[in-house]
Amino acid sequence: MFILILGAPGSGKGTQGKILSERLGLPKITTGDLIRTAMKDGTPLGLEFKKYYDEGKLVPDSIILGMIKEELARPEANGGAILDGFPRTAAQAELVDRTLAGRGHRLNYILLLDVTEDELVRRMRARSQVEGRPDDTPEAIANRLQIYQRDTAPLIAHYTQRGIVHRVPGSGTVDQISGEIKRIIGR
Ligand code: AMP
Image 1 (cartoon, rainbow, N blue to C red):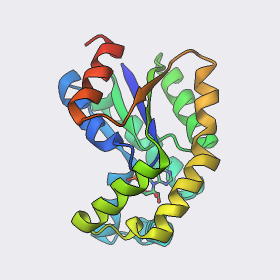
Image 2: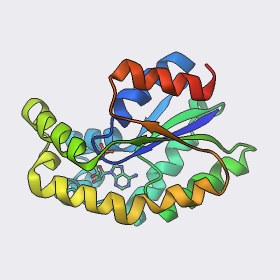
Image 3: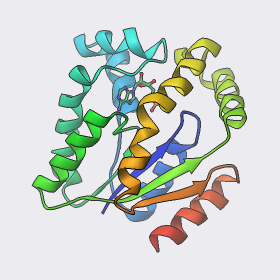
């Protein structure tokens, strides 16, 4: 089963993705974590990522599509995966759809974590106190929210046509939200 967790930055994708991945025993593929690891390791790709990441801009598709393809091709992800943080653009969605279809799969569920913008900003500011992420500065947060609306939110319409989008109210407690996800997926 392939499940995409979709939502604005700060909506809790990482937290809910982890719970779901452990419960279903499926690997979680998180582009943000892969990018952070490459930056920490200082690889050539990591240095390239950093230019965009720190400002809260999306890493261009020309750089990231190859990484997404590689991750989906891993044997661990053969039977399913939780996708966290991608697809985030039309080109990424097309790549994911095409790659899964080529293996006789498709995205089964899109879980859309629905959180108000005020709450998103509050959470990211709180996180910046704890984690000190360079992209949790006020400027980068504003960029990320704007880019989500412009580039990622349109994917909701694309997947809604297929009837696989489930809106999850993202403002309750972590347990309430994971309970709602469990109800939607049925396990
Ligand atoms: P996240 O941890 O998912 O909020 O991602 C943090 C940052 O990593 C984003 O602001 C982008 O700079 C970069 N990033 C993560 N996933 C992607 C993706 N699928 N496409 C482009 N950039 C990404």
